[in-house]
Length: 274
Image 1 (cartoon, helix red, strand yellow):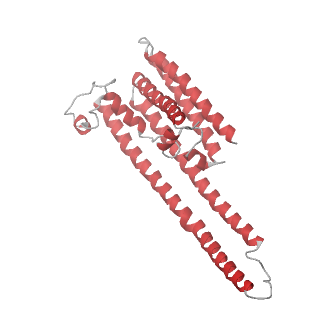
Image 2 (tube, rainbow, N blue to C red):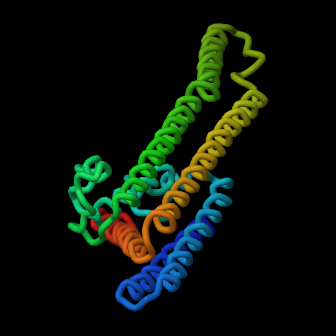
Image 3 (cartoon, rainbow, N blue to C red):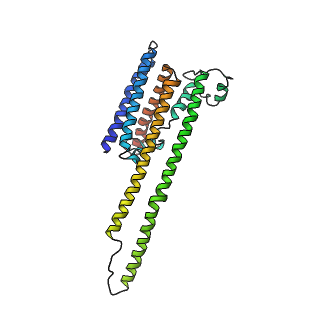
């Protein structure tokens, strides 16, 4: 099973590299038509959609793996949110591309007190800024809702299915210890020797059921997070930005992803991992 998980990720990385090459070539071609640029953008989104579908199916087999995937570096895992990047990351990258002061003066841009910015690599119109801001606020609310549900899942795991099992095991251990003490002071051996195998088997089944419920919950949350990531990215590159702006954003996002993966591997090697 692990091999299929790793193979899926490796194909995703190779696809990212291939798409980045196409995007860089398109960005360097000033005569590229909007139709050509949109075709490349759609190829990138198709790869993203296919990978999200693969992740959904694999997560149903083992959801927790995606929350600390062994195919990622320790540094990458430290910044994961619901098994991937935060959906708002693309919006933050867009703010950076339009100029470092964009977020600080966003309200002024929206009110028309400042004109379109061209400090960064691209300029956005007031209409585009309004759309970006609305998308940002919607996505933040969706992120918060998913985060709160993950916190509830964490709390429920310890409180409901596992804690009663732990308490029962503690009680059984105390009874077993008491029985052993009585037996040691008596000339007659005890009729039973601690908890029976039936109890042990039942506890194992209960623990396995609790862990499966938790794993299924993680898989469901990651599936919803992936859908949010995909929807946010598609809205940005197909509804908010023009094709050339979308190409620039996709280049930045893919270079960031691939660079973090490479830097993370170098760091793991320096720390004796991998």
